[in-house]
Image 1 (cartoon, rainbow, N blue to C red):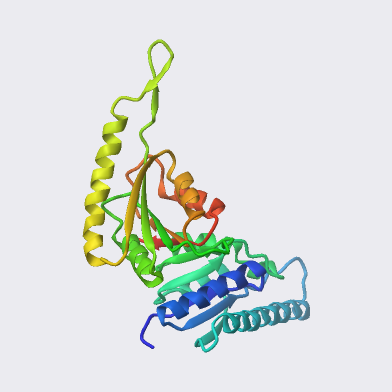
Image 2 (cartoon, one colour; image 1 turned 180 degrees about the vertical axis):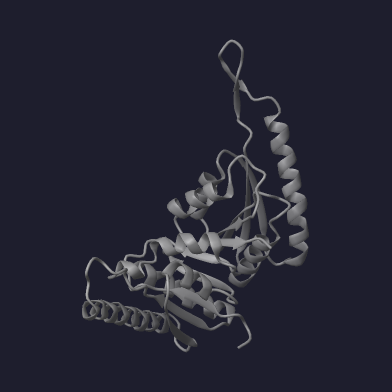
Length: 290
């Protein structure tokens, strides 16, 4: 098996187990192995806590971590019989340890609201940290819809720095035999205020939107040639890109957004990521740029 492994994090919560199940199905799709990780940071010393008490707490946390790994491995095996599954207990700060575990992986898959038995293992904040710092694509699995839409969505913000996210989205669409829907959100206001104080169409808004659609079409044409079997559609919408992508998540099996070091739009990439990760209706992939 030569494909890069898929890494999934667990803290024993049902949310993280849902992410592990999604990762197991993804591993089968990619012909890759699955590595399940769990981190258990020891709590800080409080007051005059004596060594025996700290040792008891440490053992409890490690035991819970190992139990979470065993349960997650069983869930993955149930979802994908015959899948190669490894488990890996991690030490250190959970956010950093889990994020680093994705190094060399094709993706790191996490739940959105981890609430494990021990707060030192909870993945809720870990997913946010990983989405902002991981070197590989991070998929945050929110509530999945029962149906299959056969569509992968992607938000294209910076047209000059989206190669990584487009590659990821097109490859996922090709594997799923799905179509790809690309959305670009225009930040030009639809209405302006005249001197008389009345609302009127903002000057140039239609022209800006038309030019954005033309640029997006030219960009996607290059990818259509690379992936001729993937049906591609596009849309340029007005308003906050986060709202548009949340709407797209209701009719897509996966929504892909890029994570850029810089951004030229009025809405920063952090605000878009925050909105989508908070409100999306399905799995979200955050792909770092080069």
